[in-house]
Image (cartoon, rainbow, N blue to C red; front, side, top):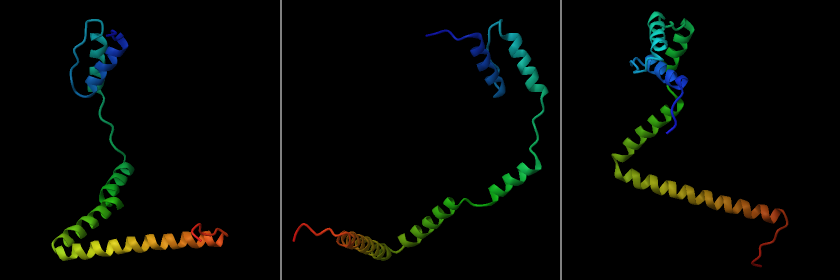
Amino acid sequence: MPTRTPAERLDEAVDRILTGRQPAVGPELAPLVDAAALIRSALAPLPASDRFEERFASRLATRNPVAQLVDAVTDATRRELRHPARILITGAAVSSAVGVGVTVLALRRSSRRHADGHEPASR
């Protein structure tokens, strides 16, 4: 396993300081780590601007369109699952819709072939 450079060890120590943990380092890095800890404790957190707070509040207040869709589907599913007959009717309607859609697609493709001058191979 390759040994890490002093710069890599210092970088890891500073990351630990930034997350609030005290790193264990050797005597060669101790003065730098102590200086980093003092700088971190001396700096006050930056306040968020009014514009940022307004935008953040508006994002929290407005609902995501995907979340609204998921909620609508969830409500519809709960409502339909209470009545097993509705599930059967819904399944039949969806099946019919798919069948009609496939038939329309087949007829449309067939009519395009004839319009382009292609004759069916089965004649």
